[in-house]
Image (cartoon, rainbow, N blue to C red):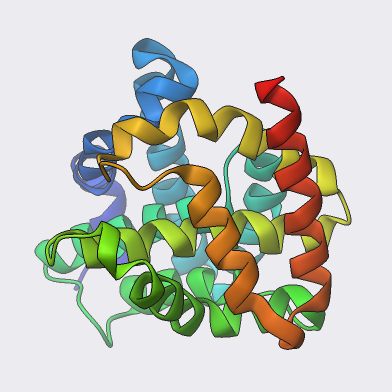
Length: 234
């Protein structure tokens, strides 16, 4: 029987395209990078994901995908993206693999799972924030319920996980400017998320509130990013 890596290589373009196509439904990419650049670089990244997966399978080393994930995260964070975005990309790849018959328990799927796990920071405030992100997002969403329809709640939870991912990345890199730059850009983009009267500074303020005493570094960094946003209004 042909090796999974060879089977995957033969279907590489189809799998890459299937993995990335849902991403373009998010208006973030077109707004942030322009329609042509967003699709060109998105498609290129998807093909690279599959190529590294083929290499990982050829060498029987999930560490190939793990190292690739960490390296790519560093690059993408410097370009205005977040760990959350890369994890969504890898989740799309896992879904595309499953549609081709490589679901949980198969080598290709498990190598992608290893890549996603490698995006967890090893320790420190960034890892704690990642571990708590889902709970923090639910807590903040519950406190903002008056602004939301029932259908909006899961969308806002996902949105809050994205903001917490930017925060964790800035903490790990020890670069507060990453979060500040993101906030300055995102405040103009926020209305396209479609949350009506819920303003972006209100969202950031609620995140700061739920971070509490368990996340002092994240809370302090977010406060600094908030100041940066306020300065853009004057």
